[in-house]
Image (cartoon, rainbow, N blue to C red; front, side, top):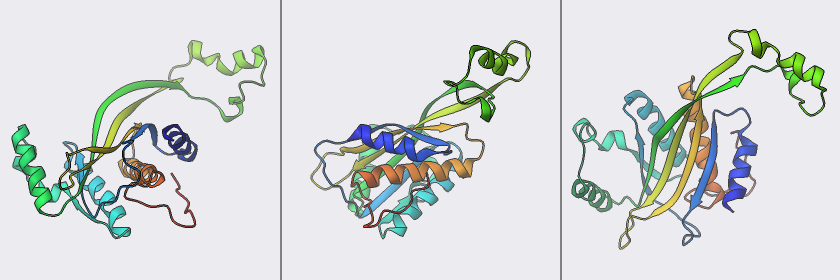
Length: 218
Protein backbone atom coordinates (compact mmCIF):
# COMPACT_ATOMS: atom_id res chain seq x y z
CA UNK A 1 0.00 0.00 0.00
CA UNK A 2 2.82 2.40 0.92
CA UNK A 3 4.57 1.79 -2.42
CA UNK A 4 1.30 2.38 -4.25
CA UNK A 5 0.81 5.77 -2.57
CA UNK A 6 4.37 6.82 -3.34
CA UNK A 7 3.98 5.75 -6.98
CA UNK A 8 0.72 7.67 -7.38
CA UNK A 9 2.22 10.76 -5.79
CA UNK A 10 5.18 10.65 -8.19
CA UNK A 11 2.86 10.07 -11.12
CA UNK A 12 0.69 13.03 -10.20
CA UNK A 13 3.58 15.32 -9.32
CA UNK A 14 4.19 16.51 -12.86
CA UNK A 15 6.01 19.83 -12.68
CA UNK A 16 5.42 20.17 -8.94
CA UNK A 17 8.29 21.48 -6.80
CA UNK A 18 7.72 18.65 -4.29
CA UNK A 19 7.89 14.87 -4.35
CA UNK A 20 6.88 12.20 -1.83
CA UNK A 21 9.90 10.03 -1.02
CA UNK A 22 8.60 7.73 1.72
CA UNK A 23 5.17 7.29 3.23
CA UNK A 24 4.42 5.38 6.46
CA UNK A 25 1.13 4.67 8.19
CA UNK A 26 0.73 3.07 11.59
CA UNK A 27 -0.28 -0.54 10.80
CA UNK A 28 -2.63 -0.58 13.80
CA UNK A 29 -4.68 2.26 12.30
CA UNK A 30 -7.24 1.65 9.56
CA UNK A 31 -9.10 4.98 9.64
CA UNK A 32 -8.15 8.00 11.71
CA UNK A 33 -10.41 10.99 12.33
CA UNK A 34 -9.59 14.21 14.13
CA UNK A 35 -11.87 17.01 15.23
CA UNK A 36 -9.33 19.59 16.38
CA UNK A 37 -5.82 19.73 14.93
CA UNK A 38 -2.78 21.81 15.78
CA UNK A 39 -0.72 22.72 12.70
CA UNK A 40 2.98 23.18 13.42
CA UNK A 41 5.50 24.40 10.86
CA UNK A 42 8.96 24.47 12.46
CA UNK A 43 11.15 27.12 10.82
CA UNK A 44 13.04 30.22 11.90
CA UNK A 45 11.45 32.16 9.02
CA UNK A 46 8.30 33.64 10.55
CA UNK A 47 6.85 34.73 7.22
CA UNK A 48 7.19 31.24 5.73
CA UNK A 49 5.81 29.68 8.90
CA UNK A 50 2.79 31.98 8.79
CA UNK A 51 2.06 31.23 5.13
CA UNK A 52 2.49 27.49 5.57
CA UNK A 53 0.38 27.14 8.69
CA UNK A 54 -2.33 29.44 7.34
CA UNK A 55 -2.69 27.56 4.05
CA UNK A 56 -2.66 24.17 5.75
CA UNK A 57 -5.21 25.40 8.27
CA UNK A 58 -7.49 26.40 5.39
CA UNK A 59 -7.41 22.84 4.03
CA UNK A 60 -8.89 21.61 7.30
CA UNK A 61 -11.40 24.47 7.43
CA UNK A 62 -12.65 23.66 3.92
CA UNK A 63 -13.47 20.17 5.18
CA UNK A 64 -15.18 21.41 8.36
CA UNK A 65 -12.32 20.29 10.61
CA UNK A 66 -11.22 22.69 13.32
CA UNK A 67 -7.54 23.58 13.05
CA UNK A 68 -5.27 26.07 14.77
CA UNK A 69 -1.88 27.48 13.86
CA UNK A 70 1.00 27.01 16.29
CA UNK A 71 2.03 30.59 15.60
CA UNK A 72 -1.15 31.65 17.43
CA UNK A 73 -0.56 29.34 20.40
CA UNK A 74 3.23 29.30 20.85
CA UNK A 75 4.54 32.71 21.86
CA UNK A 76 7.95 34.02 20.81
CA UNK A 77 9.46 33.17 24.18
CA UNK A 78 8.39 29.54 23.79
CA UNK A 79 10.03 29.03 20.39
CA UNK A 80 13.18 31.07 21.05
CA UNK A 81 14.69 28.69 23.59
CA UNK A 82 15.17 24.97 24.15
CA UNK A 83 12.34 23.18 25.94
CA UNK A 84 12.57 20.20 28.26
CA UNK A 85 10.62 16.97 28.03
CA UNK A 86 8.57 18.06 31.04
CA UNK A 87 7.65 21.37 29.37
CA UNK A 88 6.54 19.57 26.20
CA UNK A 89 4.45 17.17 28.28
CA UNK A 90 2.73 20.18 29.84
CA UNK A 91 2.01 21.60 26.39
CA UNK A 92 0.52 18.28 25.26
CA UNK A 93 -1.68 18.15 28.36
CA UNK A 94 -2.84 21.73 27.77
CA UNK A 95 -3.76 20.84 24.19
CA UNK A 96 -5.61 17.77 25.42
CA UNK A 97 -7.50 19.87 27.97
CA UNK A 98 -8.50 22.25 25.17
CA UNK A 99 -9.96 19.45 23.08
CA UNK A 100 -7.14 18.91 20.57
CA UNK A 101 -6.78 15.34 19.36
CA UNK A 102 -4.01 15.58 16.75
CA UNK A 103 -0.84 17.49 15.86
CA UNK A 104 0.41 17.81 12.27
CA UNK A 105 4.10 18.62 12.58
CA UNK A 106 6.30 19.70 9.64
CA UNK A 107 10.01 20.47 9.65
CA UNK A 108 13.03 20.63 7.33
CA UNK A 109 15.43 17.85 8.31
CA UNK A 110 18.22 18.44 5.78
CA UNK A 111 19.30 19.67 2.38
CA UNK A 112 21.75 18.78 -0.37
CA UNK A 113 23.19 20.52 -3.38
CA UNK A 114 22.58 18.82 -6.70
CA UNK A 115 23.75 19.37 -10.25
CA UNK A 116 21.98 18.65 -13.51
CA UNK A 117 22.76 19.54 -17.08
CA UNK A 118 20.58 21.78 -19.20
CA UNK A 119 19.01 19.56 -21.80
CA UNK A 120 17.08 20.40 -24.94
CA UNK A 121 13.66 18.86 -25.38
CA UNK A 122 14.69 17.18 -28.62
CA UNK A 123 17.54 15.39 -26.82
CA UNK A 124 15.34 13.62 -24.26
CA UNK A 125 14.75 10.42 -26.24
CA UNK A 126 18.01 8.87 -25.11
CA UNK A 127 17.19 5.35 -26.27
CA UNK A 128 16.55 6.27 -29.90
CA UNK A 129 19.77 8.04 -30.83
CA UNK A 130 23.16 6.86 -32.09
CA UNK A 131 26.54 7.45 -30.47
CA UNK A 132 27.15 10.29 -32.94
CA UNK A 133 23.89 12.05 -31.98
CA UNK A 134 24.48 11.42 -28.31
CA UNK A 135 28.01 12.86 -28.49
CA UNK A 136 26.97 15.90 -30.54
CA UNK A 137 24.13 16.65 -28.13
CA UNK A 138 26.33 16.58 -25.06
CA UNK A 139 29.74 17.75 -26.23
CA UNK A 140 29.29 21.17 -24.59
CA UNK A 141 30.04 19.34 -21.31
CA UNK A 142 33.71 19.59 -22.33
CA UNK A 143 33.94 23.30 -22.92
CA UNK A 144 30.74 25.29 -22.22
CA UNK A 145 30.55 27.35 -19.05
CA UNK A 146 27.24 27.11 -17.26
CA UNK A 147 26.28 23.84 -18.94
CA UNK A 148 25.36 22.43 -15.55
CA UNK A 149 22.67 23.90 -13.35
CA UNK A 150 23.16 23.82 -9.59
CA UNK A 151 20.11 23.54 -7.35
CA UNK A 152 19.21 22.65 -3.78
CA UNK A 153 16.89 19.91 -2.60
CA UNK A 154 15.41 20.33 0.88
CA UNK A 155 14.32 17.22 2.77
CA UNK A 156 11.17 17.82 4.81
CA UNK A 157 9.16 15.58 7.07
CA UNK A 158 5.51 15.84 8.08
CA UNK A 159 4.22 13.71 10.95
CA UNK A 160 0.72 13.29 12.35
CA UNK A 161 0.51 12.53 16.06
CA UNK A 162 -2.53 11.49 18.04
CA UNK A 163 -2.97 13.17 21.44
CA UNK A 164 -6.11 11.24 22.23
CA UNK A 165 -7.38 10.63 25.77
CA UNK A 166 -6.07 7.42 27.29
CA UNK A 167 -3.50 6.85 24.55
CA UNK A 168 0.21 7.43 24.27
CA UNK A 169 1.15 10.32 21.96
CA UNK A 170 1.47 7.88 19.10
CA UNK A 171 2.59 8.45 15.54
CA UNK A 172 -0.26 7.93 13.05
CA UNK A 173 1.43 8.87 9.78
CA UNK A 174 4.72 10.21 8.47
CA UNK A 175 5.74 11.41 5.03
CA UNK A 176 9.22 12.34 3.84
CA UNK A 177 8.98 14.95 1.11
CA UNK A 178 11.62 16.58 -1.08
CA UNK A 179 11.31 20.25 -2.00
CA UNK A 180 13.22 20.89 -5.18
CA UNK A 181 14.95 24.26 -5.58
CA UNK A 182 12.24 26.34 -3.86
CA UNK A 183 12.85 29.64 -5.61
CA UNK A 184 9.14 30.42 -5.48
CA UNK A 185 8.24 29.94 -1.81
CA UNK A 186 4.50 30.37 -2.32
CA UNK A 187 4.37 27.70 -5.04
CA UNK A 188 6.51 25.35 -2.97
CA UNK A 189 4.16 25.74 0.00
CA UNK A 190 1.12 25.18 -2.20
CA UNK A 191 2.65 22.07 -3.80
CA UNK A 192 3.76 20.70 -0.44
CA UNK A 193 0.32 21.07 1.15
CA UNK A 194 -1.40 19.49 -1.85
CA UNK A 195 0.92 16.51 -1.58
CA UNK A 196 0.34 16.09 2.17
CA UNK A 197 -3.44 16.32 1.76
CA UNK A 198 -3.32 13.80 -1.10
CA UNK A 199 -1.22 11.30 0.89
CA UNK A 200 -3.46 11.55 3.97
CA UNK A 201 -6.65 11.32 1.91
CA UNK A 202 -5.47 8.22 0.06
CA UNK A 203 -5.03 6.43 3.38
CA UNK A 204 -8.25 7.59 5.07
CA UNK A 205 -6.40 9.74 7.58
CA UNK A 206 -8.50 12.79 8.58
CA UNK A 207 -9.33 13.65 4.95
CA UNK A 208 -11.69 11.50 2.92
CA UNK A 209 -11.87 10.77 -0.78
CA UNK A 210 -14.90 12.39 -2.41
CA UNK A 211 -17.42 10.08 -4.05
CA UNK A 212 -16.33 11.44 -7.41
CA UNK A 213 -12.59 11.95 -7.11
CA UNK A 214 -11.48 15.51 -7.72
CA UNK A 215 -8.40 16.46 -9.71
CA UNK A 216 -5.44 16.71 -7.35
CA UNK A 217 -3.38 18.98 -9.59
CA UNK A 218 -0.16 18.25 -7.77
